[in-house]
Length: 610
Image 1 (cartoon, rainbow, N blue to C red):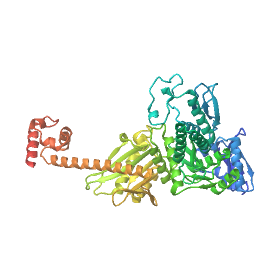
Image 2 (image 1 turned 120 degrees about the horizontal axis):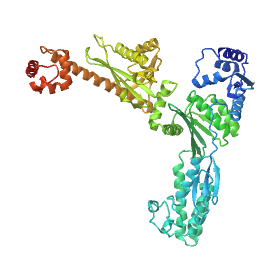
Image 3 (image 1 turned 90 degrees about the vertical axis):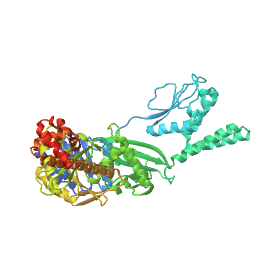
Image 4 (image 1 turned 120 degrees about the vertical axis):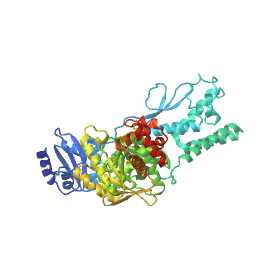
């Protein structure tokens, strides 16, 4: 292994300092990875540098490289174009690839006496006529639903003519969403004419259908067929209402694509939403199980998708950076034959569209995990804010609480996938402290926790489970007090502090070297706030409990003949001092280790105190 890497490193150092594309191959000559570089020598040599700490996916790729080839290009832009085309042709194993989705959608027009109109995935009815194929099931489903609303076609699934006159019309008829042929008052010709109008609407779009309906309305009005003219007028109004509802972008002339990435604990999702002429026309998502980071995933998706796609927008909004954005703009412009503006919106309507795409990605990612879209978004935002390599699915938080020098305790709470895991909560009694010292107490608590990990790690549960993130209720000082301990114990877990403002509300995240501000309207802030409040509640509840118990113990041990063992037995039996004060001599004497004379002594002492 070491000899092979040394040979590959030597070959890489012999590459020119020129732009180009490099092609990694395995022992069977199969291409396993394709990349581009501004300077081939610098980029390729990074893969084989001794001691290089690669992400897991890159490390696996490097372990399978037997040799590589390269192609020098005249510019970095040419390298990008060549890289996209080669990835499209060879689809290497270790490049982030889009799914080769062969599924299509169709609009099926039933061929019976009473026509039907449905969105379908396959051609299964030999008697039906099909419109399509279409690559977007979303747009097909929307088109059929919209056409049925405009022309008031039934959506209940009833079969005609079998169901004609056999049942009462449903709610859609009463709210004027269906003209209810099931009543038996609509002829077959009238029904089929409405279906034909819906098909023409799907084929011709809004403007063409409005033009035809306007001509029909005027024709009936001239012949004084006012009811038919009113029907055409109502359909025109319905089309315009739907168009107004779907004009979600202020400038109707813009064609916009929006791309957002969300990462989960086990997979990531890229959401693409398309707007054409101010209307949302399509949305889709792709899932990926492996990537070295969301920026890499975003870059690979955009390059791969728009290498295959011919419907390029005029503007492309992204939720984060892609590699070589100016080159990407130039590449898209070359493919579209016009400028395609690529940007990361920070305010206004574009920012809202990006947030919508991001929320959709989080919602899709949450399916099958038992989490909500908000929980997925909060964990992913926390990962971004803290610069973590992966989503922190298992978080431990610590806090110190004390009431005087005799009651110093610590609390540990655990959040798994953004939710409290109460069975994993732990309490610590801080020992050997003459006076409160938050830093020293925090060190003692973490040291005991780490020692338990190494003793129990084979179990993989409780203290034997390695957290993805440690949060301390405190500032930069707490973090600096703990980091040397983690290094000494070789306990490699990202550790940060949770800082409160003067009103005891979460304000920022403390790191070694400063603070990371948190925006209070973001999902990541909400998660940190919840964790900080929970660990504070848990630790202070334990502190108060210990303080009360210490007070009760001191009261009893002052009675002659009552030592620690009898005190513990009495408190275990009666639970509270109130219950003990209200107990009779016989009840006290019944406690294990208590005699009748001792019980009378306790009884008298507590009555005198009262």
